[in-house]
Image (cartoon, rainbow, N blue to C red; front, top):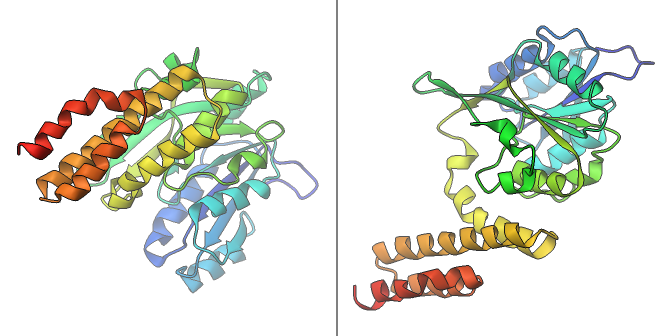
Length: 298
């Protein structure tokens, strides 16, 4: 950790609910930040909510190699924003409490940004580790292909993992993290960064995401909130027409998916409502106008 009078090279923000069953993985996450990196760092653990383990909090606060912040409200998006506000390093990044950085990866990424002063963000690849099978695979295929047009690269899928970005503190301000979308924090951020900042892509593994059965991305709430996310981007963000068309197509497909599920469960009125929402989602919805035959001739 850097001396008090020094500016750390990098601040690492770990938002966590601090529950007892996460204690071991949180300690592993912290250890992975320090492993193999010969840079000065500021590690920020942002506890949020009331479910945290009291003994864990006491243990964390007694350490002199990390800082602990606390938010009474249990909200990941606000914990991320609070961590960004407390950043003191020249660069900053994020790490989930059950993920890990690969040894020396922060040093390597920091050097890359130092050597490329025009970049505001460096996005790296990483591994997804399946806790059930033990399999480990690269998260992104041809990550550097997003370089020419990061925004349209999002049509293929989100390229920004929670621990995949290293951000320049002076140019990626804390305002980017205010009001970020729950469950889609990093896609929301990737869209906004693509529209306003210079992004570099380094197809070198820098982290491990531990994929567990209880991940939020597998929850019903996540799937339902995707519609809210798409609508918010369409309403609030000034995006090019090509990307807007892509979002309309995705939104229409989501509504039809919900309609099919409702129809399969025998809820015809609900299915009709989703179908009408699909038609109302713009020109993309017209591609599904024949779907009504399922409803009336089932």
